[in-house]
Image 1 (cartoon, rainbow, N blue to C red):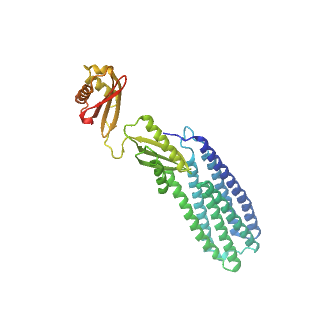
Image 2: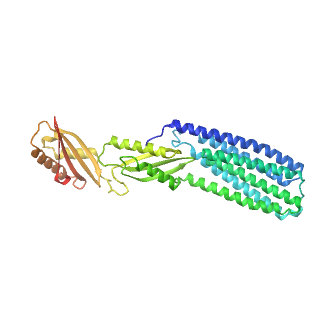
Length: 406
């Protein structure tokens, strides 16, 4: 796993948290002033709708508190218990805000239904109540416009959810305005009917917030175009033959990805690691919200390759070679044993030290004999692939192989 330098991400999280905190404090301040104004004016001018809307506004302060708490926790850096960071706290809080929206919608619908059943018993409000309803509507719509702009700028689903909460308040204030206006004009039934329609709209928005955030909590993938952009960045790296098993998941406003890349099967471990590093950097550069990318290097496409389960590891292979060459002088000349697990077989490369320089034909024949000894020695007949013998002399290297490996 290749980790990302924490400095840039930490600064980004701090910036987002400061913007979220400021926007939420502004919202909480405006809501507090509006709640007091609505309740007092509703009481003074005998408007039950204004008083109810004031109580609804007070409930928004709970939502603002949830947003502030979640934004602060989500901005924290990864730790031992949360190596992927705390972004899911923001996702969970978005669900909470969605639930609050749903409860507010149900409350509005219930109240409107009760008023619709007994509208003839309602007393009409005084004319000044209409002015306070207009003031409330303008203030709440302005609060929505401000908050949603900040949310889009910092790409915060949580703040956007809170912005829609402000929009639901503006719509409920519009209901109050229509209700007061209708009551003053002699049509008291307009208020409850409009309230039920708006409650249905708010409930729909709450469902979208809850559904999308719940999907994120169960590791929903990024959008198809985002996944395609990541895939294109991977295969553009030199040395990558293909990319497969690309998986992505959302982490709040951030995301993580892991992928298997196929490279040439016989390159060195260090070259494979270098290619993986380049893939990591390319993917991180392709999307600003990525915070972690895991790159797995494969010599073959492991979605299609033959299974290598049960193939012997190095200790067993080297012991097999020693047993096969027990009475051969070349046993003491082994310098290196290379293993390649490809096509369901283990392929062996043995490098021998060449103290003198016999004829090439002798070395080739000797390589064939030594290879056959390894291949025919009991125990690994079905597991071994090609056996390659390399000679390294004082002044030059000589390579020989079995007929089956040519």
